[in-house]
Amino acid sequence: MPIIVNLDVMMAKRKMSLNELSDKVGLTLSNLSILKTGKAKAIRFSTLETICNVLDCQPGDILEYVDDE
Image (cartoon, rainbow, N blue to C red; front, side, top):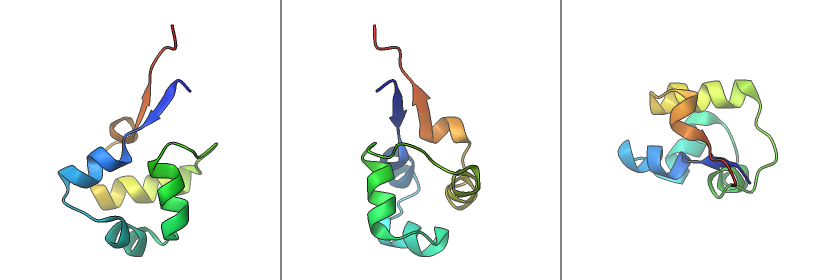
């Protein structure tokens, strides 16, 4: 898949655990885990906005496009 999710990288930079992010964002651990592992098929802009707010980052810090070629 050409979209890479770097949520784990941003969490490590902010020294934040999945449990802590889950509490602050208001998502379940399982949904955040699906997103973190890149298995999610979609993300709501409101969810992305909240994650960026909590991690103090930009959407481009979390989502990356990589050409398959």
